[in-house]
Image (tube, rainbow, N blue to C red; front, side, top):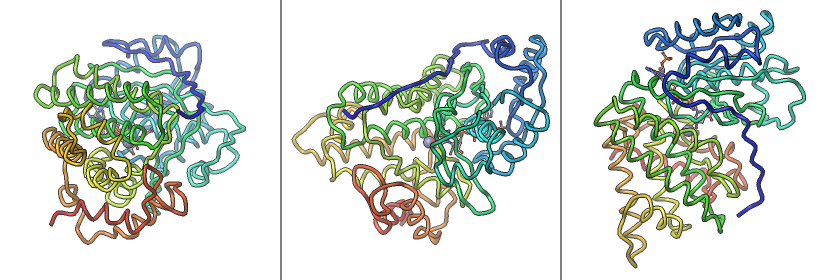
Length: 396
Ligand code: NZQ
Ligand code: ZN
């Protein structure tokens, strides 16, 4: 296990009905709030009215900025920054999924910044010497884990560039996770979310770091829970307990508790961000297409961790034939993706066979941080090898 520090200051409020308390919970921290949300689901579900009533009851002034799209845009973040500066907002309240929360973090970061906010993402600036506005969230989609992560992912649509940025100052001050708010999600969003949270664990679990028994065991329990509860929800989307388990799993999967003391990869995320930057595909669906071929290329470089996963998580019977066990584990993962309705080929994802996979692989390798422009992870795949992984997902 490697040395590590873990600091997680987010106040996590879980349970049915808790969103009605948002005004009272924010009162000690804010007098004027930016209420930030997406394309309208919060209005259709009645959540918007409940939040406004709670803010008003607590005497908290607010302005609004709506219209966050999936794969949130840099242009809306810049608009939000201008608005917050003009209106002297002191907290950003994100009501939505990962896209709304990430957009809120971008705004919070930029309001007092002496430079354009995009520079943090392009230059991975570690040293933030100015105030960052606090962010509070009411989660409506368990997936990205942004409600408790220090990360934000934005897309510069003009240059087809999707970049993430992480800093401890971006962990939310407060997050409300109420599984009742997930009941209105369409089945594909449940599946996308489950795929994303599962991959957040893969990116940490599949590592060359040894002596990680505790975080291995926590990771395995969380992976099994995600896979089981997603199947429950695919059969019965109104199961509130399953939504609660999935919601909590999504947070645990990405608040980095499971990543402590380990080398991490993020190779599949790097590849997926290339797909969604150009083709605007849902992040979790893109991951479902990339993960199996990435695993097939990676396992020979560390069969031990893949064998452990196949037996402890995928339920494959132990055997001396390590390769057969691992291949069965990957086959079962593919079946699980299919069972919850996720795509398994580029074409099913809406990406044509003649897409520019060469450029995407080169760009992912440049950004990933592996030695000499390779993908960071168990094995440092170069651009040619990364391209082969992408092409392996093209249907014959
Ligand atoms: O915009 P509205 O109308 O609200 O509709 C949304 C959106 O169309 C809808 N939705 C959300 N809650 C709903 C609902 N519809 C009905 N009922 C509800 N309760 O769902 C659609 C997708 O929402 P989105 O926020 O885009 O999904 P998700 O939470 O999967 O977030 C995806 C984004 O997060 C980034 C991804 O790259 C992607 O841009 N990620 C952020 C991370 C982080 N900050 O740590 C880590 C992840 O790896 C990920 O990269
Ligand atoms: Zn993700």
